[in-house]
Image (cartoon, rainbow, N blue to C red; front, side):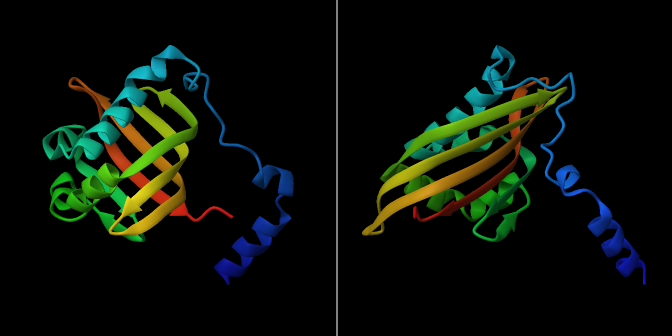
Length: 159
């Protein structure tokens, strides 16, 4: 019964209220501000280290409790990521080329979001790669600087 009441209440909400963008608080800083540059630099350094096959550098940019969502699965720590997808991610990054087509970033306090859309091309495992990609990285700032706490990757074939 409670679910039915919730469903009816949601249907009564104006469609325009459901379609609104995520509110950005006055303390949030958009991608055009230089304040986001250090967080974006960490994301770029992560990708550079992946492509170079530098596992030590990759792992240094992740928090111990990082959560990586990829291909429908989850790795819930830096150690788990290192033992599972990291080697394949480095091999894939070394064999392909990424192009950033759109990026937005925000900072609110000690949390940053970096949203990247792009295209990956190349050949991996003797197969051509041509994918549109979407990436969300959430970073946390500590005394050691910005570190990646969450990664979510998705991709699809272009239409």
